[in-house]
Image 1 (tube, rainbow, N blue to C red):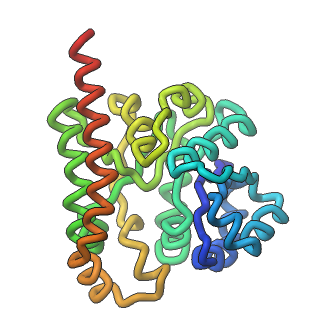
Image 2 (cartoon, rainbow, N blue to C red):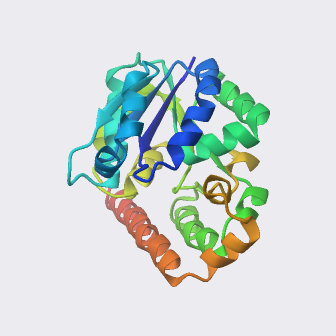
Length: 256
């Protein structure tokens, strides 16, 4: 069976209850989970930390104070690579989306996972048109810009702000030296070298998970996020960094 790999940021003990709920399902479908706990979670949610450490299904690493989101991703990948055989399939994901898909799209989600495990190439699961419609428009507009830049520069319409990626531990190990960002650009740095070989699978189970996780009315919460300047600014900060990364890679390729 394949393994899960994800950073774990849950200082307010919101996602932990879902992780506990889906744990029996995860154990049926995955060998283990490599979990990278953020510093804020370590301090504010010791109950969740104990839960993870006490179950052998989870292979846990703790991130030091001052580490950033890119560091947390990198640490989870390092943990997985060091504790897996090269041919082990790894599913790089997020806790909230994992819970949402497992509880709302169980059959098709795990069917897609099993298919990816049998394929010989890496697979990126991306949001279908139906899934994108559920997201706030500012989310879609911002992240689509990264995809469009990649399409224009490299003729590669990839979702550089991907939500789930499947590949072998051996391939991930080869890519690790390229992951130097301390922010979310690490997601683009990981998928960029794969642009010519990766398979893209559009899925409905990557619909917007937040209303389900936070117990909100989907329409009202979507409208709230669309009209929140702080939310748009948050998206634009990492999107512009990822676009800049693609332009830098374009310059490198054209110098050679």
